[in-house]
Amino acid sequence: MTDQRTGRLYINGNWVDSASGRLLSVHNPANLEVVAEVPDSDERDVDRAVAAACRAFESWRWVNPSVRAGHLHAIGQRIAESERALAESITREMGKPLSEALGEVRKLAKAFHFYAEETTRTFGAIVPNEEDGFTSLVEREPIGVVAAISPWNYPLELIGWKLAASLGAGCTIVVKPSEYTPTSAIELFGCLAATDLPAGVANLVTGAGETGRALVAHPAVNKVAFTGSSDTGAAIVKTVSGVKPMSMELGGNCPMIVTEHADLTGAVNGALRRSFRNAGQICIAINRVYVHASRYEAFVQRLASAAEDLVVADGLVKEDADMGPVANAEILQKVERHVDDARAKGARVLCGGRRPAGLESGYFYAPTVLADCTQDMLVMHEETFGPVLGVAAYRSLDEAVELANSTPAGLAAYVYTENLTATFALGRRLDFGNVAVNNVDAGIINAPYGGRKGSGYGYEHGREGLDGYLQLKHLRIRHGA
Image 1 (cartoon, one colour):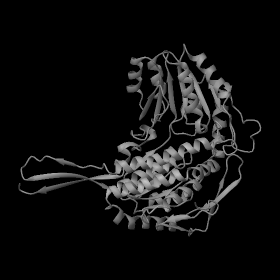
Image 2 (cartoon, helix red, strand yellow; image 1 turned 60 degrees about the horizontal axis):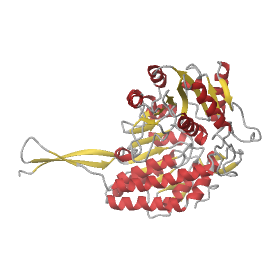
Image 3 (tube, helix red, strand yellow; image 1 turned 180 degrees about the vertical axis):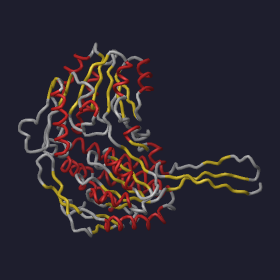
Image 4 (cartoon, helix red, strand yellow; image 1 turned 90 degrees about the horizontal axis):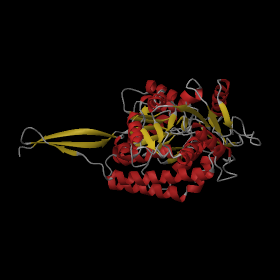
């Protein structure tokens, strides 16, 4: 595998030095130690990478889908063989426990195998004409060169969704990972380099904001695929060159509704998992819970007790810890601001609300449950993206739906109820791209995953994830038969 401490760019099938000469330091959030220095690419690096992708597209687009599928299967297999090194790089640079990082790598491999199979099922259509002697064919063709920008919270899985789907569709790609988590991406491209994937089909540039702006603004890019914050998404829309397709998964701020008919044990376990897994740094994390008044006090007490028992530790030292640090100082500051705001406005801090004792050297924060929250509190209307959960009581389903739908976010929502009427009523009325009932897994690889409203547009996962990298052509033939 590639030496992460001397990271280089991967362009046109080769590891190359950056033209900029600038380096970015990568820190371990558990102890703030520098774990790597990687290039901070400039416009010249981006131009080299896009040019390589353009050249490769002219041949890759015509490669038989079964051959492209073979390449994706080979990458998936290589990822599986390298899962420990890939997982350690994730934990070292963003903090999630190694057991979670291993799970991310396994889902990454699964994504490549899934899209390998979907690659061979890219079908067109024959459309009847109103005149005899004509046949209309609808064909699906690759869009072209893709610019993919991924975040730090799932630094490999979120690259993999874009990389596997775009290559399967016949596109070529330039990937820019988050400046906080570039070393795992370097390890991933080491896996690609160990296969016989043609040069220039997949390229990697590392860097911060300047690198991303140069990539999305490049006139030869045909599509932008982005996962990240709403603010950055809005900036990208203003930066792209010309009119081109984009897919964006933006912020979440996801609600959960617990009805009077809920299985309380299931609801507590679901909230615990989806609120504090990855230290709450998940776009589909539960930020806010609305509980029927008749079940409210029992729910918050049981949830707080369970959250108190979660083990917080350095994920490399204790591989099976429940939670590691948050990824950077900006997230820690936002967490503290949200908790301070809720406390000042009258919320009860049932657990957490502080830095854990003995872990002051890193960006650690204790799992926090805030009760008696009101909608004016930041935690209830602004995505925290940290290990903090706000809880409020409601008295009618209409009130619960209104509260859940009250923010600009529309990525995922969760419901716990054993009542069939409530299941369908909430499933239809919640204005979110994904709604999970009696479970907290709102996204699976073979179903479309995407948001609405302020949470973006376009889809990843499923058949639809591949379709996002294809464009339609109507071929109308007059043959006289």
